[in-house]
Structures are given as structure tokens and as C-alpha cells.
Length: 150
Image (cartoon, rainbow, N blue to C red; front, side, top):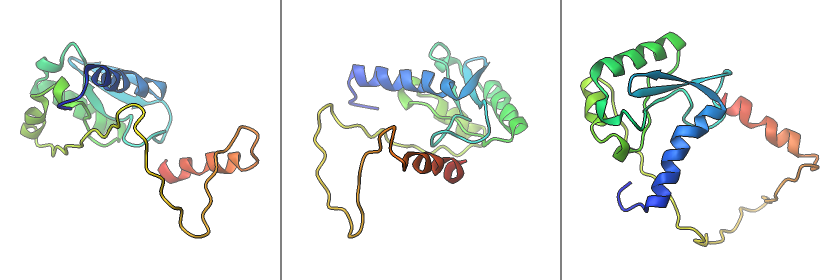
């Protein structure tokens, strides 16, 4: 998240800390927080069966904390996964690797506010439209993600 403005960084941190709570309960393990789904399946990609450092404890994450979270993840039958903005816990990557975990780095992709997106032509036979609350196609559109993503 180098070169990111403070307001954008603050929004990203707030997202990581609060959005999973809409779908999960938080369990704290010292400086780590594990989000445990309230219902089967993930309502959005990548979570919320992951752990992240708490804002107050990012610098204090130790091997025992990681081991406790991983044990709880195994108990729950969820992937052993940690997700965090790199700058919030710069030493966490090395500690996870020392615990035998592979760490994948994913760049944050963000456009500046008001950035126009180029129009792209749709393939032949494809139409694009916004669905409204009274659109008869809405129930089918809402039913699709659950079986597709669990």
C-alpha cells in the first residue's frame, strides 16, 4: 500500500476491521483476530474465515498467537488463512513463513475518485442492464451467487 493516500489507507483499514463483522463473529487470540462465519459459505470472495492482526497488536504477533489461530481454523474446518494490509503488520509475513505458511502478496487495486472507466464493447448477443427492486429477473440474479460461491 505504498504511495496510498492517508484517506484511502484509512478506508481500507476500516473495511478490513468492520465489513467481515456483518457476516462473522470476531474471536480474538491476543493480537490476532479470527473472523468466524455465522452461517455456512462465504458471502463474498476471500472471507470471512481469515485472521488479521488487531490494530493495537500488529507489532506483537508471535509464533504462539499464529499457532492458536491456526488450531482454531483447523477445529472449524476452514482454510488456514491470514489477510492483512502489509503496512499494518510489516513483520507478520516473516512470522507466518517461519510457521510454515505460504504467503501470497496481492496488490491493492484502487482507482482515484472520479476516474473514468473506458467503455468496452459487449460481445455479440450480450446485453447489460441494471436490475431494480421490482425487476422480475432480480430473484434469479440474487440466487446465482450462493450456489456458485457457497
